[in-house]
Length: 364
Image (cartoon, rainbow, N blue to C red):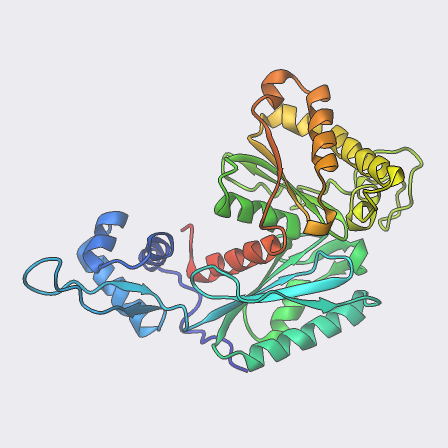
């Protein structure tokens, strides 16, 4: 197994993390330019850069001798080929997916794995075996694994409840970390999606992200921050009852929102009247459920993360109409309601970003 060397990760020195973050955001820079951008001293930057070069996290580019006379300026950049980060998305109804990321934060090919018929311990065993194979066969050492899972996940990566996966009080993060031998971070898929949409889009600082997959989850961005709630259960919109004595839900209740708004409910024939009616009902119930949030937080955007085959103009139109009917003009007049183009890998981007952030000390 390749994995990462304990002497490399995590990065715990703030100056090293500042240098990494600056290069991640701005691209290659000389030591002097990094010092100016971060307000760190030249000596501190030089020590940090030398240390990160020694750990193979950074690499030097060719000398830029034309910039100024005298000693050449040597730009450095993140070494995208030195380590990789494995991101995992468990939110779909019939599959789970993974992708490798480099320091540039961009995914390689997204691979989907069939999981039909697998829940509980059987699914974990299958998942852990595949991830072990991926890590051992990787061309570069895998520094860590980020996992986006549906359900309520506590701050230690334990799955308190994920009915669709058959997990209750399941210590997913600790079990995977023990099995894989590399750092693992497990978080709610919708929280990771909200974090990713804030990072990779221009939707604003007040966003409600609705994740439609095997179930229904939500993530909030409030003043640029993704709140997790006191029990780390913020965003459990799918298990809010919206229809009294409605459809049976995997959680044991009846009439939960995700029994009306999920991938299985939106896979309808839009060429038939019944299909359009079903879409409008789903959108109307979702709009009714989120309108208080729109009014309470005065959001910039409601962003829907759903795969291409689940999207429709009718859904967005009905959702926007319902919100407008149930909120004041000041709450909805400048509100954007839209699909995101990152839906197919938004959880993976968020999971990769989270494990990279923890191992590289970003945000210190």
